[in-house]
Length: 491
Image 1: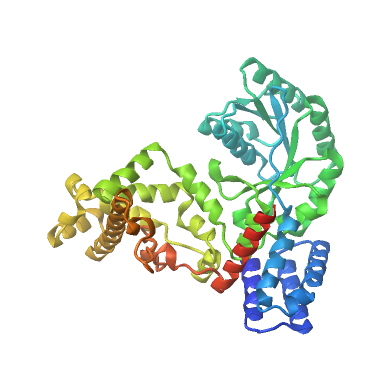
Image 2: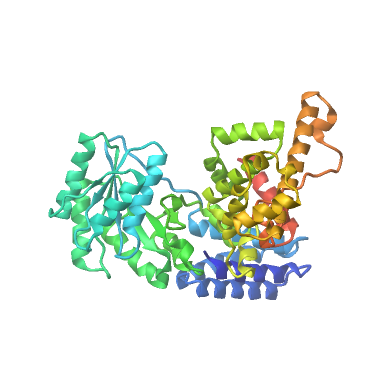
């Protein structure tokens, strides 16, 4: 996702950081590089021209040129302008008071409308709503069957109305929702290989018949420059309310998606980052801008962790503080990481993580989780609860049972040892805090607790989470945090 754009922009910022003060020539050169990076990423030419002009104007002020850290100011300005280009703030779905609410999806064939409809239904179901899917694509072979199959996988019913006209199917779905107390109807309309009048008229007719609360257009991130023409035509005919960008994880450029907001004025509401039902995410312009600039999305990681957590895990955390860290706990951690999107997904959201991932060839060996799981499952119940009893003879037996080498078993044992030591330090601090000791409140002066290795990271050559880079000098990130804090205080 935006891999080439991120690399090009960070290379530009690295060159600026090597200069004490910036001249007009430095700014002009940097803006030229940024313009080329955006164009090569398939961002619309008019959007690029406006973006670079506004950014350059702000960068040429004396406040930037004569500051002690001009490169940091340039990064902040690019971040602000990129966030504004993407829409500034999150645009949420708007629901009316009527039951059911109707959400209509439009777009070209192959854009991912059907899978987007299912993912949206899954997301709304997680939020406590009762969605119903309406199969109004009567032209594509097996379209209704596909929707019914995917809907069945997530436990959401599908209204088909086989043989009926799409307008009648949409009306029937609304009545079905009323009869069975479903509060949201998601209408999956037909697409075409290209924009044509018949498709547009049918979409307009369905919209008039069901009066949807929201019309969302699904666009393929890999469409490239042509995405501008597509969304502009749909905006004129169907006047959609927002955009779902699909397959955003499938294109290293993805710049066409960056053009949608500027060209149409319509907000990006969701982005699809994978194939699974839970891969549809609300779109946050500020977070996406930071990820493009290599600053990561730490808030997103926290939210994913909160979603993956449950009451049992909270109880397990309390038990770990009391009794120590077991191999069963490590197995649960690995499952939680998978639930959060795997190490590749998490690393991509860390500051500098995407750049580190690109330098490794774009791939992480997620199979390390399966290997470590096999090692743990080859242990006896007692060994999982008390890993300290695992001696050389036991390690050889475990390695043979898991089909791995003793060295790989030793690596996992080392990771367990680090986690167990950390739990011991946390238990000591908790006991001191309960006793009211100063050490419990502040810890030893100058002593920092190092983040433990996440199972699998060390084997991939990344070390602990705390060892990851930030995609630039630490001072850049500190400055941004200070600026954001000042902005929050002003509000």
